[in-house]
Image (cartoon, rainbow, N blue to C red; front, side, top):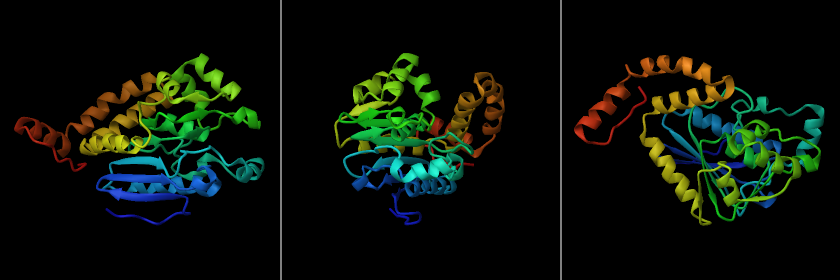
Length: 265
């Protein structure tokens, strides 16, 4: 197990084998995203992307809350001056700008999860939340629209009626509501969200990394460019992968009734 200390000190990093734990670490401010934390999270995602040893990231939060969203006291002057854009982050954890990430992201969520926290969930692949998690889209009460992708993804996941109810009113909703609206995968007892997220990550880390990347690429293409565009590329993805060492290893492991050892080749 090893740790890295790069970045602005707003998130922690920990490598556990092929899994990269990224912890939001501004608990005294309810993990609200100031510009330094936005940048540090993007840096951590970039480190994860570039490290071939890492196959799945788990994002969690230190303290009692996941995040209170954007720290508008600190960010508003930058937003007014045009000094902050998600595209400036490089690899954007919210997925509202390119380039897209190529590796899986699992979230463990507890307590308050407002605005940018909801939008981080909507760009993740798997989200496990504690039963005490509470959600709210408060942007319109602060004079701005949801800016991290919810106007597109919340409506797609939950349907127009539920998404607009919460985005237009700022009304709070519960963990059970989040599950019902298909924003998350699973609700667990408080304290079990991170262990359960790690279970998902361990299963992902055992799968073929090239196939995982191809699956994400196709899904992102469908989301960004439409289903027809993604479908038109599926055969090319399959034919590219079928000649890799990982496919041969997967077939041999199945025949020999053993766990495959994928190398990403």
